[in-house]
Image 1: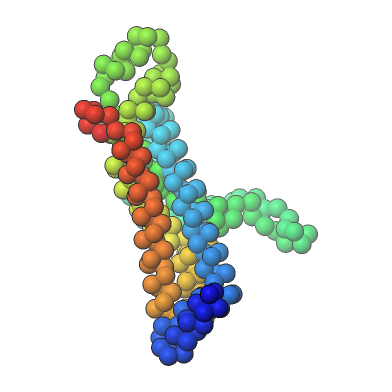
Image 2: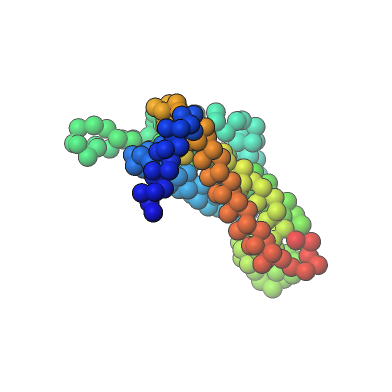
Length: 252
């Protein structure tokens, strides 16, 4: 059956040269697509996790008694919200990347940077989305009644315990719809990692249709469908999570 599948697309390429699904009948091109998809998933999952952590920690630091800490968090938010993510990506990789130490490569004589282009993409995009997540969680925290926090303090909870055990679980429920939108945008923004040669799905797709112009339309179609599926799975998962965490009458 697999042979019939491959032969179908090989024949389609012969009959309709502009619709050459080369990745379905050429193993090397299929391997490039699989590799690109793997990198896209790694980028998406890592950036989602780290950006949420940054948002949770940053929202907590915004209410810090220290004025300096609050100003640092606000400066971070303004920097990453007011500059394009692609410019940030280039800045992290080409500017900050020059100051990171290197180690000796496997061959024993080349120098390999400690943080690869994939690492810089994860760092840059996580900080970018994290800045928005800080504000999302801050608005969720503000929706928690002050009386709830005062009750926790009256019971002897520390500031960290109040945030971790009382405020954050309630704020998280309120923040989920806005967080969902931001994480969807983050997954789509991972395509910008092509700018620093991260071999994610867009990078591999461009490479394929550069080598085989007849495969341009099929590869663009595959790219389009792949992101519909990836984002669709994320939206579905977030929606089900939102429903599971819903508190009747709490406005979430």
